[in-house]
Structure formats: structure tokens, C-alpha cells
Length: 223
Length: 223
Image 1 (cartoon, helix red, strand yellow):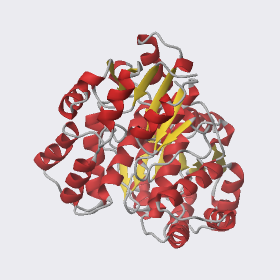
Image 2: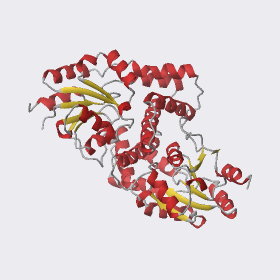
Image 3: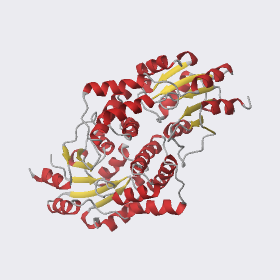
Image 4: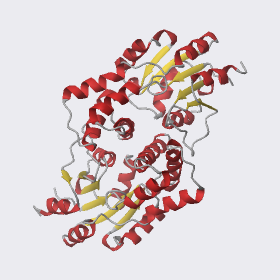
């Protein structure tokens, strides 16, 4: 079934986090530090949800950057930490994203974004990236205080959009995000951003695409 | 309050995973591959629990190693994958662990182990490491099919040991494990294995120790 609603993950899926990578690499003097940071960030967000807590994603990001700096034995100032974390608010979309979203919109798909990030950060990101006008809705897990892949995060969007899981599709570059959507019976599309791979033990996503151009082609070939 | 029951995390806390690190580094030809693997393993275990699924930790470890090999653009045979993962069953304790456990036991503490690993792997690990006789009990999350830091994992041990959270202490080298124990009101001790740091947003563990020798000293100084 062709999905009516496309739900897009934001960081790494729509937006290119290269400036964050460059900032963290420069700050900590190590090319692996960015991945350490992103991995600790996602891990601790899941831990908050598993232990029935909730903190703003930006605050968890700051804590994760402190842990990453300790791991790399670098002392960083409060100001450098803030300046580096601020970079997440000024990201560009991956090169093919804008045109593909415009074409998907022109084909009648409803497009929304769903992020683990806070609402304010999401608004700044969409505004800065130039993608804002292409979306029909924006969702942050802040509304339910449960991070993806907890089912409440996806369920909230489906309820607000008055859509069934089967008629919707989550588009993401992260195995953990795909797993959460699959649990609710949503359709899924995995975008193979560099270094990202599906979870071999999970149900294979119906669409696996190298980028959004391929996503557009696969979604419209039978439409 | 001096805890009566000490609950030890196994991998990285009691046991030195250096052979796994060497095996994965050799297999994938990259010194960062081991950390990638361990990080994906922990992440996907949490995802299984968040999405109400359960797979054996060893099977998630295999899936994580496949994802890590894809990330490092290396094709690995089924046999090499199995041989490398088997290394987790033949690990030695960190150098100071055995003597410290013997001394803690002689002081009257009750010692048990609690792992995200499967029961069979746990038995093989304890047998191979020479630590088996020092413990009064062994627990795997296999019994509750929820990975740490889900509260059920810790609650199961407290129930079986007929102990209150306040009278028990979780000893671990992982921020996520400490967070889970804290949620239940257990005492905690963080062991600073290389590259491991507490979560700055969490409650500070009452004991932060560089190794088990320091743990023994801190636990017995007032006893």
C-alpha cells in the first residue's frame, strides 16, 4: 500500500551533521569523537526513557559531550561546549533532500518531521535549513516525554495526524528508529547514510534507499 | 548504610574484554571497531527492550558485529564471526578483581553477578575466569527477558535475594547500568574502567572507584 503520510527523522536523515562532526573533531582533537558523542547521546536518551525519566535532548547532548571530552582526556570550557552544541541548530539538508521533498509533495504525499530533539531546536533547524515550508507538520518527542524508539513517540504522531500505522511510513537513517516504527506496524524506509546499516535481526525495511532521490523513485514508480 | 548484597555487572566490570578488542580489531582491521561493536550491541539490546522484544545477547552481539563489519566495509565469513564472538566466553578478570572479591567475601558481603548476557554464556564466563566459587549467586536478564537498565532486570535479583534496594549495591563500569539501579533506589558504585565515565545528569554514585581494590577499601573503611 502506498503510504499517505511520510514521517521523517531529522538529524542525519534530513540534515547533514558534518558541521557538528567538524566542531567536535576540532574541540576534542580526535576524528572519532563525533561518533562517540552521537552514540552516547542516543544511548543516554534511551536510558532516560527506560528508567522513566526525561531530559531535553540538548541537555543530554551536553552531558554526552562532557563524557566524550573525559574519554578523550580533554578539558573543555563551558563556552566551547555551548558553541559546539549550538552547531546542531545551523545544519544544511543533505544535497538531494530539498528537491526530493518538493517532488514528493507535488505527488500528494503529506510530509511531517519527528525528532528526539526539543521543539525549539526543531523549529530553528527547520527554519535554518530552508525545509520549513515543505512540511505539513512538525513533531518533537517533547510532547510525550519518551524518546524514540518508545512506541508513544510514534503513536503521538499517528493520533495527531488521524492516520493508521499501515498508511504511514517512517523514513530514517537509524536502525533503532526503524525498529520502533515497525513495532507499531508502520511502513518504513531506511536511508543508507554513511556508516548506517539496518539491524539484521529486525524485519527488513520494505524500502532501503541510498538517498532521498531513490526514495522518491521507489515511492512513485507504481503511483 | 553498608550494603549487605553486592551485585556485580560482568562484561568490562569484572572481566577484561581485551581479547574481544584484539579479535575484533584483527577481524576488521580497525582499532575503533571494538568500541563500535560494543556500542551497537548495547544500543540494540535497549532497542529490543524498548520495542518489547527479546533476543539472546549473543545473537544481538552477532548482529552488531555484522553491522560493524558493514560500517568498516569488510566482508567476514560466518566462521570468523563465530570464532570472534566465542572469545567473550574466555575472558580473564581485571587483575585486581579476584583478590578484592575474596576479601569482600571474607568480610561477610554476599556477592552475586547480574549480566545482560545469556545464562549459558554467564556460566561459561564464570567457570573460565576462575571467579565462580567466589559468588553466592548468578543472574542473567534471560529470566525476565528485559535488558538492563529496565527495572525488571534489577527487581528480579532483589526479589530472589529477598533484599531491599537500600540494602543492595550495584557495582558497574557503565553509566546506563548505574542509572537503572538508581531508579530502584539501590546503592551504586561506579568503577572507572578505561574510557568509562558516569552520566553527568544522573545522581552521582555514592562510590566512584578506579578499581576493585579501591571499592574494597571504601566499603570496609567504616565496617
